[in-house]
Amino acid sequence: MKVLGVIGSFRKKGNASFLVQKALKPFKEADIETELIFLRDYDIKGCNGCEGCKETYKCTVKDDMQKLYPLILEAEAIILGSPTYFYNMSADMKAFIDRCYCFNVFDDEDRSVWTSLNEVLGVKYAGVIAVCEQDNEAGMGVTAEAMKRSLESLGYRVISTVKALNAYKAGEVLNNKKVMDEARRAGERLLKSIQLKERVKNQLSIKE
Ligand SMILES: Cc1cc2nc3c(=O)[nH]c(=O)nc-3n(C[C@H](O)[C@H](O)[C@H](O)COP(=O)(O)O)c2cc1C
Image (cartoon, rainbow, N blue to C red; front, side):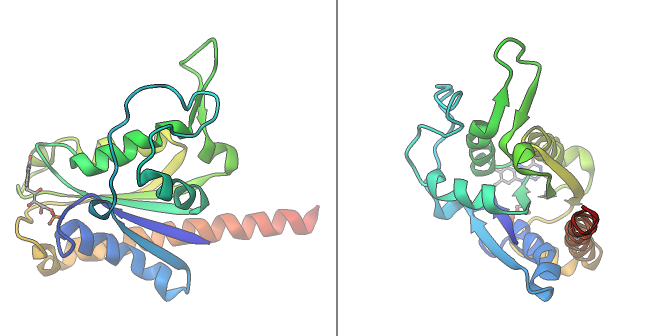
């Protein structure tokens, strides 16, 4: 079992980074493998809309996203963390999500019908963490919601959403115990969801 933390901020010691790491803590404590991905370390171009993935479910763009695809498919859960940039997620996070388009599979005749590789492989869980400078949710805009809805369309069940307001300087969020606790709780709920799923899976196979 593996859980990915994906950070859309350039600041490795920034707020999104600390919050995602806090959410990953319960997994580490349970000896579950985690991997922290700073998108800035990867060369990820935007989706070019070629639809070349339509039949193969593989992206045609040859860049570092090709290294991340296997990790995403293999991971049981994913936690996305992004700063708010102009009321939305960062460009790095947007590119990452757009490039997951190859996982979505549409019905040939009716494009209002779709599934995703994640759904086909089994339910996956996710958490989203958004952080912004303003002290009100309006200042955060659609950051959290845009990540959540994208993940849902990619077949994830989003268990927790953390919105950290009022954090401007890198690492400032560490002084906000309430939101750091929320991030930890988000990780705990994600972990418990996976454990619950595993428990029921085991029970069912015992009965079979
Ligand atoms: C390009 C840019 C745009 C930003 N836009 C917003 C915004 O729309 N609303 C807001 O509250 N904060 C905004 N901020 C502030 C960041 O969201 C805030 O500093 C955040 O804590 C950065 O997270 P990080 O430490 O993980 O990088 C912006 C910052 C930058 C650099």
